[in-house]
Image (cartoon, rainbow, N blue to C red; front, side, top):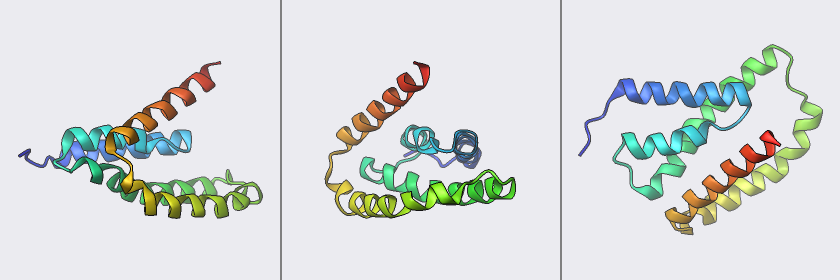
Length: 119
């Protein structure tokens, strides 16, 4: 059993917050591997725990970006309905997907996004 290291957890949270704040997304790409390495969480709990950490990060980032006038709510609001439905769907059925496939899917999205931004 690993001893919990608050300094490493804080550094992991800082990394996720910085990535989310700078790029507008991606904190989960940092947190999922770090939660796997730094905690004793069961594989099935890593993704939901990551989401629970990302929620306040997103709230703080939204506050900061709104403060600087960087959010276009006219563009953002229409996406909310689809996002809410997607979140409900994932929350309801995501735990039924084998963790191995969740890791592969996350890796594929990371690769796709990286190639898309490089080209």
